[in-house]
Length: 136
Picture 1 (cartoon, rainbow, N blue to C red):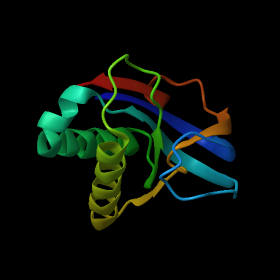
Picture 2 (picture 1 turned 135 degrees about the vertical axis):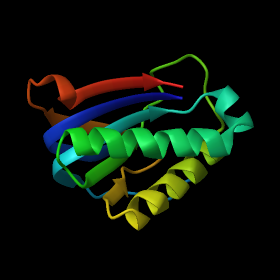
Picture 3 (picture 1 turned 30 degrees about the vertical axis):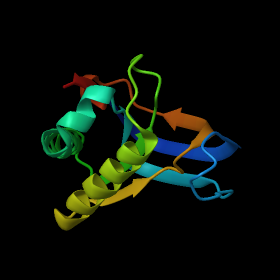
């Protein structure tokens, strides 16, 4: 798992092109403010340790959100952090589980459209805790 977390004053996306035909169509843009945006790449090895990866991901997201004083967390599939890639169905299922756990813990957690290349606009402050990378 590669997890790049960026605290954003503002994060905007617009679906540009669908890359995985089996996932739902999505055409709406989205804008989030005061949010921790998690750019996430699941790796092939993660499929063997799903529960452990899920737990570590939730713990890291909560920690980084707390560091940045936000309850807003955005999960974004970003398969450009490693050469190893997990199955997309595994990844989407993991995202759904993590989103549910984060919501159950009181966070406002959402996902960007899965299976799309997105136009994104990131406005992030120049502070150290606004950019955190974890690999596990």
